[in-house]
Image (cartoon, rainbow, N blue to C red):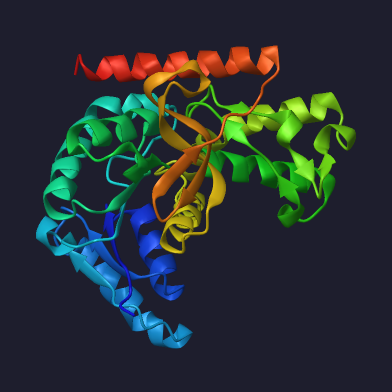
Length: 310
């Protein structure tokens, strides 16, 4: 059986980790695209030369031409500028909007049957832009946000309790930014509600750290933003699609009435499989959580409305 072809649009830090993980896990044959000549080719060659040490037979290619992504089964988009210290994800809107428009046309024209995962920031606006310009059906365009936010929340809870990260489950909804909504009642440690194990003040601190987790990394790095955790989050989504696993993951999905929202990409739990976003799941929230979620949706709406003025 032929391996799947996976196009990675953006050869920066996240794109490099994606190519490595896809090739070395043999999820498919990655094609790394970037507009900078030599960058994707160099990264691809370096990865390909390391593959024998892991027994990985995937074929890795780098390119500056959209035509080389032709026939891709899956496309993961990370193209765009990364945050610098003091910047919010929203500050990237104007520059990354023009990049995303070009990417959407390139993918639409050369890989029209692909399922697409968008990682570029500001995420909610960028996945919306890709969907609008590509004309792809909503099930084949999904944004990576909640998987990463939930993973960060899980990590902080596990560290606080001194337990395995494997045993912590969490769900973070809403926009991918400072208005995200970690749902405390859905967080469990091997089935035990986390509220039974941690005091409210400690949980509140973890919620706030989760909201600012990306900025914390940016402030420490000073010359870039997080790249390993976002790449691994996209890989979890890619694997669910490629292997038709029907995973329930928090992703940015186009809502058409769910949660009372219409026409926006918002982070919600969904079933992810070979058909892309196969179902959006609606979860009950407390009045306080619902208020936070609605505020997050309004922030996304305001960001999307800015797109028309740029």
